[in-house]
Length: 128
Image (cartoon, rainbow, N blue to C red; front, side, top):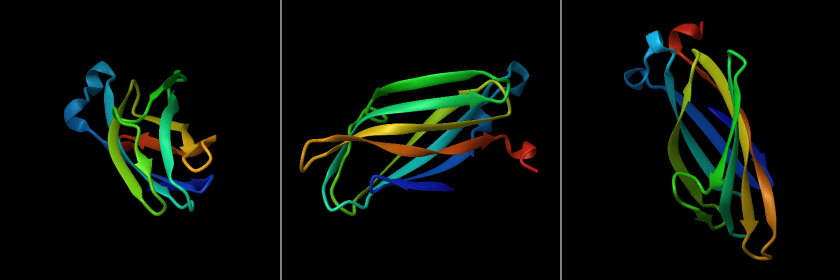
């Protein structure tokens, strides 16, 4: 698991290879990732947008952005956690992702960015 705290918000990431949804003969590799967001601030925050940088080991790079995460824009009171699971497909057996969340301080209505730590996605037999 990878974790990072920025702007008082902790983001932790755990990845899972999905062999049942992958087809190595077609260069299709599916990964799931579980993200836990924890608000360590003394004020409530709301997640508005996400921005991802996705790197495949064949040199392919893509960006993904949009509102919220998995269709919601969660609000976290001080000390609260929010967890969700999503996925990423790669064309090779390994890659990595990192990004940011655009969040709002609900006390003073200012926007700020929270860093999502870089994490690797590796097919298990390649991890040794």
